[in-house]
Image (cartoon, rainbow, N blue to C red; front, top):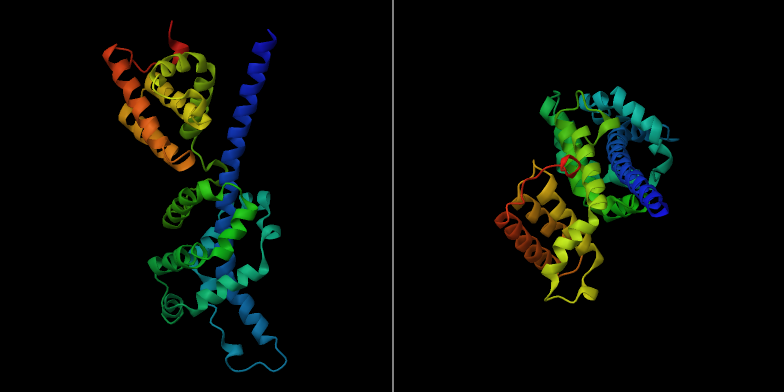
Length: 293
């Protein structure tokens, strides 16, 4: 009874941690998008600072503020979902004023910015392109800025590519985006079910995996590799929407990215072997284990 209770507690804690990781992804997304808007708005700050000099020059009095009036920028700033997310995170308190100014000055020096402010009309695509340029060409290549992100968000290295894609998708279609639900219900359900299924069937999954390790020193197998293989076999057996080849390729990539140099080859060999055996034995029925009798 006590072991069952501990198992339930551990499972609940794991689900909570999974939710926290998704929350961290949302916070990173909101912060990075907020930083982009602050860089764009800084044109007005720059104009005010220069105009307030004791003896401003003609150049000081003619700072171009076109970017701060970017139509997409204000669509973002007035997006109710984004406003709510910003209120919740309060990214202003996390910002570094020196890094913000540094990013703006780099932007001003770019040919893309000069072309943007010297174009009289406001083209929808150009409004989007300049905000995307801030992200792709000013912020992300800047080691000072990415180090700043790493200090604030320990998930930056893992999530950076996904966040880049999410922001670019949002800039292309900001209407109807829900910042409270960055991870769709389907994705959350899949992640939670995979976590729970792998945990609850861990002994059975290990019974399938261990016979395939006869030529390997079990003590030297990375713990992460064992977890990845259990998840892979779990997908083989219980997740009907995922083709087995997709499962194998995904776990190879995960092993290469997060485990040892040899892990990709190792995980590939074991999962491929198990897949062939399960297929030969007619066990690839892919039915949720809770529905099995």
